[in-house]
Image (cartoon, rainbow, N blue to C red; front, side, top):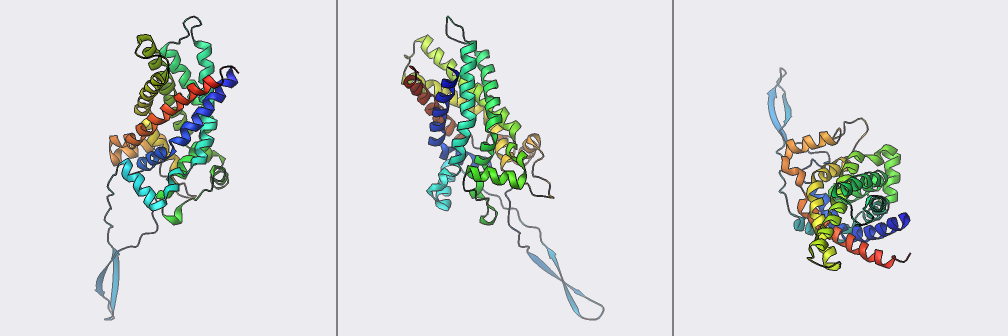
Length: 324
């Protein structure tokens, strides 16, 4: 029973992750809007100042003029997607998809399977239901364990998705998720594979608790109230509601996680962020509190379809494997 839950959850998660990958990529790009992106060596504008030396010769002193900050307009998900395709091609919408497959294989398979085990263990044998608090508790545990296992793939995915926004000379140009993980381990140390892991774990705990627990709860309410029978309509309604709840709860953590994972750390230089809290403080100071909800539209646009595909596929896979 335990192994079966991992298989069912893994298959459903991989299908859902791959089908919604372009929306996730657009979300990452939007979350990085407003962040100080690495720039090539700037060309200074020089202002000549004449000075006459004692010998009568003329010397020219130059002083740099302060550069005028360029304020980039914030654009919506459709504009981000269109610009991405125009500048990088249609294939760019699937940048990092190999990392998504690995992430879903490690992270989602673990959390879905572990949640299923805890659900079977803690459910009332007669009623076949589990109290909401128990569902949340199971989600927190399953999400935390899954995120700790899948963090290297998560870091690789964020970097591969964000690579196109860097100047051509500064792109990492990872060939695949294996290449990304290997190069990160060699160039930045093995610990870099768990960069932002505290954020990943916290986010995953919130996602799993809000997503899986709310799906089960919404589904139970719909069936108990007799609104719909146990079928596709119930699964879609409950899963979309669960996706909205998960998006609202996790977006601030997701923004900080994306920025911490994507930051470039160079030898001898201070990293852009000292940690998650430092990133949150700098983000709010520089861009305002609502910056923590950057990418919310693509987040809900991705979280909704992802959750729908996830649970609808999961219910179908369960039917196929019910006799095993």
